[in-house]
Length: 203
Image (cartoon, rainbow, N blue to C red; front, side):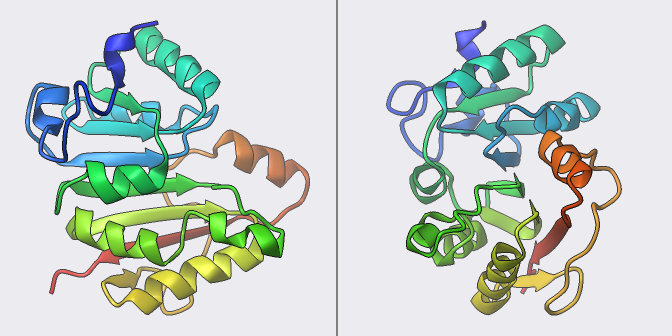
């Protein structure tokens, strides 16, 4: 496992303006929040060796496994940050430094008393709007219809985003994205899969 690919806040990352040092070159970031056991982000990075890719997950075992996968593929344009998403978006990413966010099947926290833990909430919309460049994208996926509706309500309600599927819209997996492990599992169980795509407005 190559620990040099692991970003450690407070040491090799002391603020939102240090990503050029972390990657060794300038560029906009593509960020996946909650990579889990999937290799989706690695597939993107492999197809785009000039891009800069950041995976965020708080699980230590998943982070270690992800680091091994990066090393096995020989990828040099991916970094891993083991941290809470709220900390990453709120403190570690600067204004207009991200070109795309992916959050594929984030935990829906289906019990009402746990709903405040959901990723896509007003703070997420606020920080995504701040950190995305104009024209930057957010791609979300869920199998949970109530969470799907919350995602739409939050992002359409913020004002900085355009729903690329139309107002209130969602749909199937967009071209260029392979089915994740979660999607494959839930599809076998006959569950509906909902993809949402939003763009940061240019004006």
